[in-house]
Image (tube, rainbow, N blue to C red):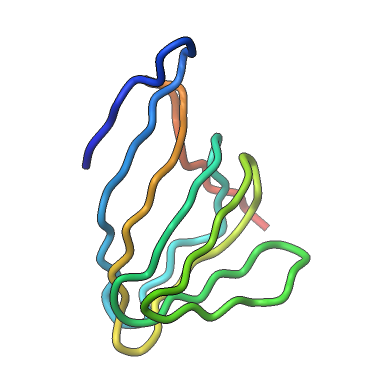
Length: 99
């Protein structure tokens, strides 16, 4: 994972690769800053509260504003994703959101 300070702000940009095993799910959560993800391999299912489910394959991407509640789940072959996000260093970035 890489992180760099964003000059003139109290925030940093992070970037990393996440590998999801087959059918793995990241439960309902929200990020405290904007995030962007690009699917490198496999299939990623993204469910944003109140919106239709998106199924992304290699080459697909999504972006979310801060505090958007969502679930991400890998398809049957798993998924490899590169993601970037902006957040305040030292503070939680992902917050689980119960139903």
